[in-house]
Amino acid sequence: MGSRAAARLPKHIAIVMDGNGRWAKARGLPRQVGHRQGAENMRTIIQACLDLGIRYLTLYAFSTENWKRPSAEVDYLMSLPGQFYERERHLLHEHRIRVLIIGDVDGLPAATREVVLRMQEETKDYSALTLCLAFNYGGRAELARAAQILARKWQAGELASITEADVADALYTRGLPDPDLVIRCGNEMRISNFLLWQSAYAELYFSPKLWPDFSKRDLELAIEDFAKRDRRFGGVENV
Ligand code: IPE
Ligand code: IPE
Ligand code: MG
Figure (cartoon, rainbow, N blue to C red):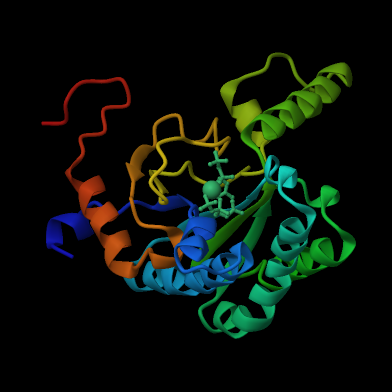
């Protein structure tokens, strides 16, 4: 990566890990094999973020809409956090990676819930890289939940008004910086209910690569593209 890119490194990268099914289909394999390969690729991208000095990485792994899929596929996806934990536990401790789960953990099958909570608890004191796993996550569900939290606080007389900061505090991502760069791979140009509030001013990057093929080089290309952008946040050009 050039020095200019290094100078304008995103602090928080969020990725929609899309394209596992098509990756498998192209090889005549069941979708599950694509999901397994996709889960393997998480290590490559986590390692790349460590190498590049990215402090926050959010990975969209299962959406609140993904329950619509056939039950065998859903069951397999629910087993992936456990497989990830077994395989990558060593990496998490060695590199002091904090895992944070964003999404409706209560809505997960017990075994999946236990493993994600254990991963979170075991790594809670680390901060070299914060790995946010969006699992059973939906941006609209998150905002509806925030509205409920705020309504309760309002009723209890704890709020005099509701500010943007109050909303941000009621989200799963409380305390995290907003993503600077949102990458979607898999050749689709949509957000699919990801970080609706948090990505208000994120730079968007779409990659044609299917997630299992998305490499460190592809991540660097996205970061290089990010570095060239002029982020105005509604203001005027940076001079
Ligand atoms: C992304 O890959 C993983 C999840 C959404 C769980 P897909 O399974 O959506 O793959 P495609 O989009 O069908 O290729
Ligand atoms: C988005 O991918 C969700 C995840 C990657 C976890 P989808 O494959 O579910 O999104 P759509 O259906 O193409 O919008
Ligand atoms: Mg998809």
